[in-house]
Structures are given as C-alpha cells and as structure tokens.
Length: 473
Image 1 (cartoon, rainbow, N blue to C red):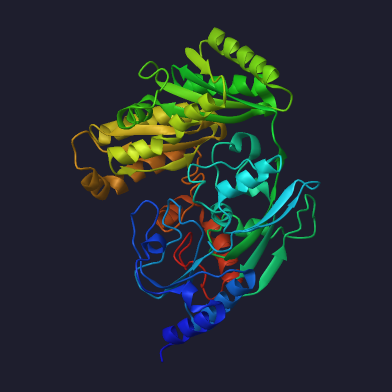
Image 2 (cartoon, rainbow, N blue to C red):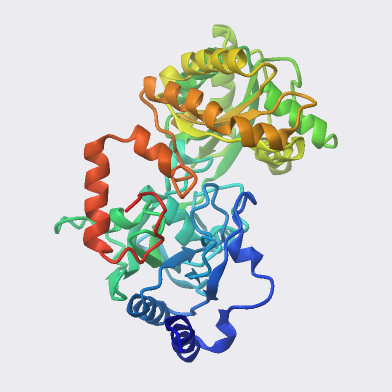
C-alpha cells in the first residue's frame, strides 16, 4: 500500500468515507472561479468540526501530503484550487457552516469558517444588527475565505476590510494543533496579535476554522444616489465633499467608467442605467444614518447641491425606496457579469492613493492605447478606498482568447509598472494566489519578501499549507 492509499484510509476512518471524495465530477473543487485553471486533487475532504480538521492536517503532515484549504472557491487569483499533480488534498470547509454564538451586548458574532457570507448577513439582520462586509459573491463565498484573502467589497470606506471586522480566530496550525483565539476582545495587548498573521495569508500558514466578527447596530435609514460626473478628478472632488457633508454616514462610494456602464446596457438591456452615455463616469454612493431618513435625505441634498455648484456633479438621482436603491447598486454589481459576457479580459485589482488615481488612469490609458491599438478599458471600483478594478478588454472583433493568451503578460507589465510608479499595490482585495506569484516577487521589496518567507518557514516548516501560493519556497 502506497502512502496515498494509506492516507485516504486514515481520512475515511477519521471523518467518514462519504466525505472523502475521490471520484466523480469534482470540478466545483478542482476548477477556479474564473475557469482559468483546472487541477486534480488526490481527494476532496469535507470535515464537519475543528477536531476533524486537525485530524486531516495531522494525517497529511505524517504522509508528507500538502493541503489546499478551500471555502466557497470564489477567489479571483487561483489560490484555492489544487495543482495538476493529483497529490494534494483539498480541505473544504463548507460543512462547517454554523453560527456558534451571537453576543448582543458585546456586538460580536462567532461563526464557523464555512458560513456563507449572505447567511451571516441575514442572521445578523434578523437579530437587529449589521454585518457590513458586502461582496458580489456573497451568496457563495465563506467567511473563512473572506478572512483568508482579507476581502474588501463596497463598504470598506466606512467599515474597513475583513481584517478590521475580525476580533478573534480559531485556527488549526500546520502541525494540526488548534489555536483557540475566539476572545471577542477589542483590547488584548499581550504580545503578537496572531490573528493578523492568518488573515490575508490565503491558507498558507494554517486553516481558519472559526472567527469572531464585529457587529454594528442596524442604521435607521440607508439612502443611495447615482451621480454623473465629468471626470475622475470630479469624482475625487465629490468624494471629498461626501466626507465633509456625510462624515461617518458615507458607507459606499463606487466609480464606474462609461464604457463599463455601456457593457451593462448592452448585455442587460432590461436594466435602466441613469445618464447612459452622458458623462465620462458615474458614481454610486450610499449614506447610512442612525437618526432618520429625513435627516439622511437632507444631508444628501446639501451634498449634491454643493457638488453641482462646484461643477463636479452634472446630474444625480436619489433612490426613493429600497427597491430603487437595490436597482442602482445592481448596476454596479452587474459590471463584472457584463464584462464576462463581452469576452475574456485581463483583470487588475489595484490600489492607488485616491488623490493620484486620476493621473494614474490618464497615464496608463494612454500607454495601453499606444501599445495595443483598439484596446478597451473597463475601469470601475471602490474609489472611496482607492481600489480600482482596472480591466482590459480585447479590441472589437478580435479573438479575446488569443488576446488574453498573447498579450496578458505585456498588458500586466504596463499596468503594474504604472502602479509601482504611483506607489500603489498590485493586489488590493483579491490576494496573490498562484496567478500573481511572480508579480509579487517583482513588486515587493527583498526585505519584505524575506520577512514573509521567514514567517512561512517558522510556522509551516514542511510547506504543507497551500504551497505555491503567495510565496515560492
């Protein structure tokens, strides 16, 4: 009996044969969200408890088999799918999906890592609380995956990334031990804050099995506006006014280029897009108020009056009800789907200081246009926190698949060189995975890379956890 068969027998005995999958269609676990890569797992293992996760890790360590932790498998950088060797174990947390405890007085909720984000949001809302993390994939992604990639989303401008929402973790280490850190404390100054090592580590240091997350009171009202602006400079100016007039009430500020919006109109003609073709950019912004809807609406009106007087807003609509607000947000959330309908594209998840974004876009648009005639730029994203999804679509009537294959490396070189010149980051919220592994080595300082490798080696000396992701060993 070889080591792989022995390992599979151990896993079947430990968590049940029906949860050690080796046959049939396993593409849901072996193919990445964007369908760029398709690997082959030795097995997909689905533990139901932290103890079972620890058993799986210990068995894999003993057998010298590497582990790929996986939540909802909705990542964008090929970070949670196995390689093609057929020798890795995919450790799926999907069965670990329970709410463990909601502490109303402490404003916290403790959940299993496999809890789907939308289920967590709904549980909190039913209890009268807000869990503010909001992503396009929230119906499928899990809180463990959100933590593993330090996911962002549309409300970072007010509440921060997933890291800022996490107060404690439970983690199975690379040796199969359990670190119990679900304290829910806001102040704990007793040495290194270990949770921050695991948040954003993309499963390369250990397996997050549970988390204690912050809650907020439900706002008394939420209002959404959709504004046409003449330029990115005007959008940045509007953002400044929004901070001034709305203060902490500003919970979302998204920018959308006109070409990005035209794709929504083209592929989803039933969707009404305000100011279609009328302005270079549009902005969707949200104001949450803990007083009353009248107060929130008055704030919005003062903001828009000031913005129109300053010339940074050409026209705007304010949603009159929840249905209209959802329709406006749905426009923004439909851009990735519309772009996919248009054809394969080259994606960039970048962050730049907000003040420098207009110059970055102007310079990079020009450089790409000069290097790749007819290229189309799908520019949209979370301007409120400096995160753009600066994507490149092949020229009209060209072979999108061939363009991606032949030009992705060259397009990335242009974009990432500009990001570096502007002091930005090549990954704002999607992570590194395997897709950006080489790019990280080019754009991170040698000192930073050495520190990261030292952490990886110290915590996971056998390189068991998600090898070939984030860092090369």
